[in-house]
Image (cartoon, rainbow, N blue to C red; front, side, top):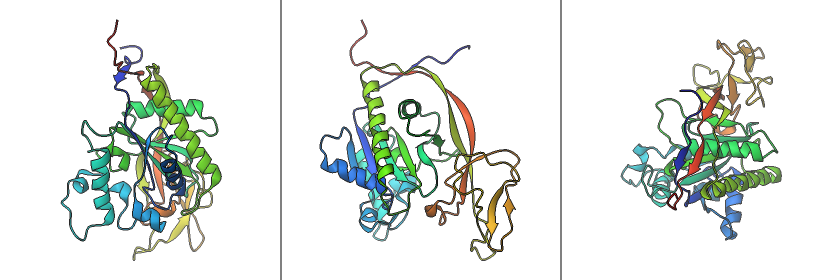
Length: 313
């Protein structure tokens, strides 16, 4: 059929949560949520997700909370020696979910910082999540301080494992570069402005605004690249200076990506241009990820408006 698909109608968003401190050393979200917990006029429900990690100013205490919202963990029986984050994930699921249920929160924001040079990045699972795609488009058109690229994190066949998957739908804000355990006033202000913009969108959606269909570019993950390693597992090379800080820039075959400690170059051997992100992210050394590979794609998104609560005339 010619033209765009008919606009979709979705229910208004009544229950909106904002998680800070999913990683306890990513300080913009930690301190924004602490600020909102004192400021009762904030329009959504703020909460600190990984309380013990926030207290210690570490990413996590037992395991990465933001990888713990899969069916396997959420349905597991409590054990004495389980990591703190597994029990905490169940609590969050009970409070803001349960994941996949009718009573789950309508929307959840998750606030993150990265040590990588990703600027202001909007992260969601896939382009099929209609409402967050419209929210991202609204942010990109109304928040003009930065370009706000959209990053789609879910690989084919992968289960949603992040905290915002507990709600019916959600969005993560990823701001960098910022060192772990450090609070930068400019990124704090930017995150607050982005949240205000996103909440404006929710208010417009809830009051019946019709959002037309649009086309948008987004970056979709295709895989992850580990550091070169010695046979004993120790890394044998660093991110090349020419790749460092080049998040969302095109990376072409034969471009240098790693520099071994002995000094020569390792080139990118792929057969097509990719777009890297999370380049040299401090928290990803343990995950064996030097950068994430993405492709840049254009998506056609159908229009959207809310199901009006009053009957049509």
